[in-house]
Length: 141
Image 1 (cartoon, rainbow, N blue to C red):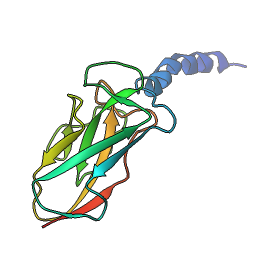
Image 2: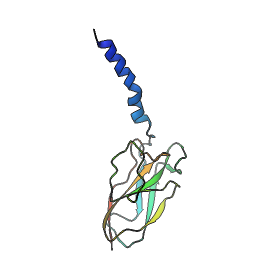
Image 3: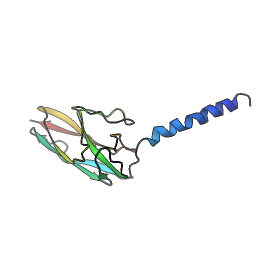
Image 4: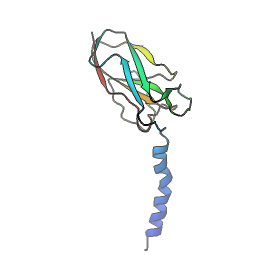
């Protein structure tokens, strides 16, 4: 068929880019889970509050350490992660725990806040499939 060969060559040329779109994310084992030990969903707390992170099915390794079946914690405060293909931002609403920490103390203003944990790989990129907690809501008095 005329024109088919150039089309086929173009499609084959794109395959490495398509493969990279998935391969740059570190795979997570099936059943891996990250969760809050404290606070619990719906809790009323005072500030500063201690947040403890739980993890099952994987291990914790500091950022920059590339080790299979590991990652490090990120705490999202009043924020949803919009880009799962790139490094998680680092700011007041996206807290990084690249040292391998499993708890932190957080100052929050009085009011209702949404919290979520997301595990990132050695480059702060969420795993494929993402290992993330349910969003919890807390009230700070």
